[in-house]
Image (cartoon, rainbow, N blue to C red; front, side, top):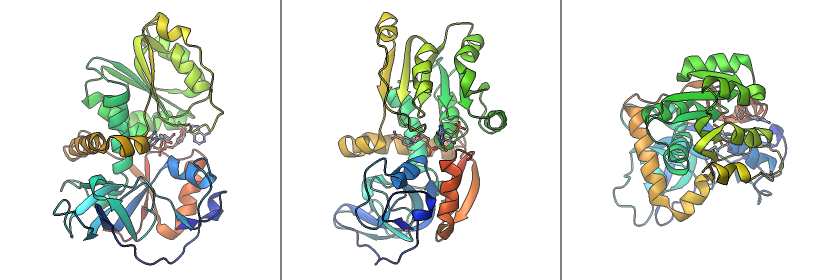
Length: 326
Ligand SMILES: NC(=O)c1ccc[n+]([C@@H]2O[C@H](COP(=O)([O-])OP(=O)(O)OC[C@H]3O[C@@H](n4cnc5c(N)ncnc54)[C@H](OP(=O)(O)O)[C@@H]3O)[C@@H](O)[C@H]2O)c1
């Protein structure tokens, strides 16, 4: 499922390509399921640049290792079930080439469907919380886009890593209800009024950590919701708002931090850190501490419908594409 020009979901089309060959340090994955992520909407829209010919998006997938390239001796092996993070895309396909370092063994407790939606969201949520935001036991946490793929697992991971209270924001009361029930938030607020709601929930103190993948006015207001010594971790631009010029006085006056996370950059500069985050998060999912709520499943040829859902912000939980199936 590829696109060769940027635009709406209608630019996605099926094409036939030769099965790729894994190079040194790579594996060939026979894809069973692929996750659908907001980053792929932005890829298709051209937020990361123009496509260079037929481009296959898809940042995470799960399946079985079909072949290994030079230097990949047993880690993983042909026939192994893996959840894969694909830094250059390619997951919306029957076969994908993946760096072996980002093909994570899928624990027995997780099926391929769950694995298909796991590698990017679990790794990101873990990396943002434990890495960028330096979550400490006893912290209070606020998660924007709380009902979504990353948000839903971040809420549960935050709790597992010792958060004292976990709050969220979403666009509608219906999503707030869903997120509370599905992911165990203490409270979920409709985003427009969150600074007042956070102050009320925290007796005026604010929260220790904010996870912000939305940007725009939400980012600006997040600084006002931050307790002294707090951290706002920025990791996305779902609102596709122009970049901000933020005041820094509220930061240095009260020892606050604005920090960033980007999995693609981590893949290039610190692949071992990324792998450690992924393995920790997958272990927690296998132990049942974190649950992916897969609410929507589409066949690969219907990827455009999945893109409509996410692009319009109507999604809840995790959406996956069935490619080869289990
Ligand atoms: N930095 C990284 O390495 C990294 C890695 C993975 C994901 N991310 C980011 O994390 C965020 C969540 O990703 P995800 O794939 O799990 O998506 P998601 O949260 O399942 O879906 C995106 C959500 O963003 C919210 N949103 C806010 N403003 C929006 C707008 N103008 N249009 C559409 N949606 C809007 C919507 O929820 P509401 O109803 O709550 O508004 C929507 O459901 C995205 O911003 C993504 O780019 C970053």
